[in-house]
Length: 614
Image (cartoon, rainbow, N blue to C red):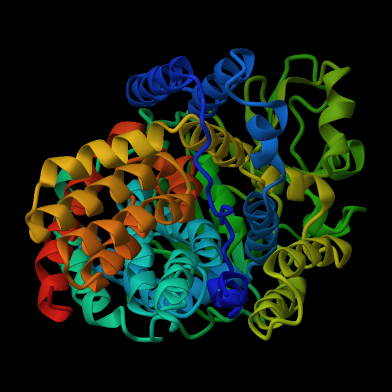
């Protein structure tokens, strides 16, 4: 019965499911050691700021060395279908981003927010609605890179957006039976007891109020409880200020749009200084000024902002030299190079020295001690110490490391221009992946891995970029969490904690319901949510039978508690996916997610008995 329910559709596919658990008899010292290891691991995650994946793996290694876990149990998470699916989804999401398709979609649907609260609402509403009908993991996998780019473009702290979005997605999954795999697992356990599964919208009666309450909490709480995790040195502190000229292409989608509508106003670390329109220079550019074909836009800014400028569809460097390089533009990178006093082109202009022919690279911008160079790039006479921003092939860096023409040569991370002509291919593969899994043509892992292979094969993203797109720290955290969860199950520690907590509730149904919820919530913070639900369900059912009350409030409490783990990175698989992307610390989850856990718990304990009376 459970297996058939788990196969309802891709939207409810249990990416991080666990087998039905059988509590094993183990020596008491193993349970004690497991408890110590879990506590120490949590302390390290809370107070040690670096390498959270190493803290988790360290705990698993200790249990393996002590004989609590077998090698297969310790490292089984490395081959878990959910983890492999997430890895494949990272590649697919990166390909959609790499082709510029993601930026176009985000700009169209998210627009330009007027405030942080407006930005949060835009990034929370649609994902939460989608999560009611499809699996949370692909939603978050696609939203993370989109929100990172969108936040940077709109000068917003990504740490203020990703965690509220993730919480909204999790709460949205509680609005239908197929919203999360945990809902389906509990429905299967309920059907085994009663002969009928839960209804498609039975959980909606409590899920919808929880989602609305979550929105009420998330927006104001994020202002106070979430820190701005931007780097200590902001982009505007960069001493290298480049002057860059960009031309509006004849086929540019920016033609006819205002500076503000095109997203060219207020870019962090970048200032639009003037527009040259057919020889007429507009020095004070109003945000309402509309762009025309052939406009030359002069920007002043730091290198990271120049990189983002290069990715805007419809703009290209003003120099035509970039089109005379041998390599396709989509395979080039931006390189920073400081001119040495032994460079043969010192004293010559870039045009006189035939820079492109000499180095197979094109100068995009020049930085000279913060000085504004009021001349065309080709007319700049090179001086020792000038920092050049070049567009070149990746081989340029290797060639120049053995020469003395430049002091320092370094690639600008993430500077390869988007493959806009491949955007439709990436989107087609993405849609095909979702439809194939939704129509149950193939399992989700097969759809995701095939899509990842397809975006590489069609050159939407190359193999090097695909490997770089996978957030290995998140995957190692996910894999190690399975080992710790297995140790808690195997040693009986989880069962001891459950029975000990529930026994404190006495004969009060409401107190017992609160205890059941608390235990399920605690377990989902430390192990997979499906494992937590399977472990607590029989205890909850027996508790309801002993008290002689309706078991439905207990069933709903387990369903909600097993999905709503907001207080630790391990509480839900998507929590781990935003960990590195948002620059979060363990304390952020505890500080922001802890109160949300308690709010959801309080509402559930109060509403469940009213909707399904004892």
